[in-house]
Image (cartoon, rainbow, N blue to C red; front, side, top):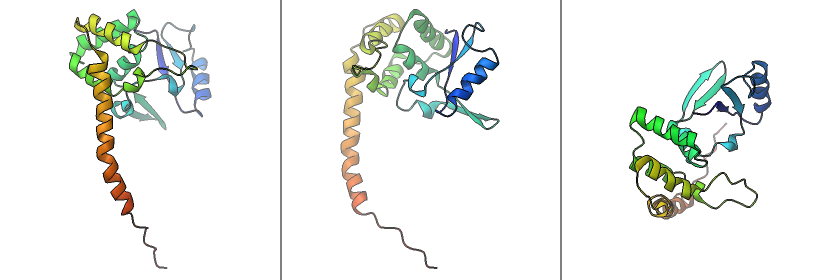
Length: 182
């Protein structure tokens, strides 16, 4: 629904990407659908978004196409009318995410619900945007803390408690590598 395609690379390729976009006339103002070279930090979604992305290598470059649900999470931070339209489009074409699927998916983005640092630009109120999304998409209210935030925090704490004793035991039993003869 946007007029742009966001791309980003590592720090070493940003200048190259910007030059390439400019050279081919793909920048904002040059064409109706333009390419916007972004910082990798600009894309904020679930903690595991990269694992769902489709990776394609062409001419020595790796292209990563983000899963639509992870794009929707990033749009939830702003939630303008065009973003709501994107939710409708994805759900109408695929039947997913369902209400339960997206609530579970948002648990993987629980850090986006934390208060922002004073120095950070505020993009939007995630709790309020999630409430609005539920009303507009699924026609009902949601208790964001009870359905998304609390389960995510409880799961993380439970997994940490389960990991901690096992990790301590494993670390205590580590043996140094054997030296090779010769």
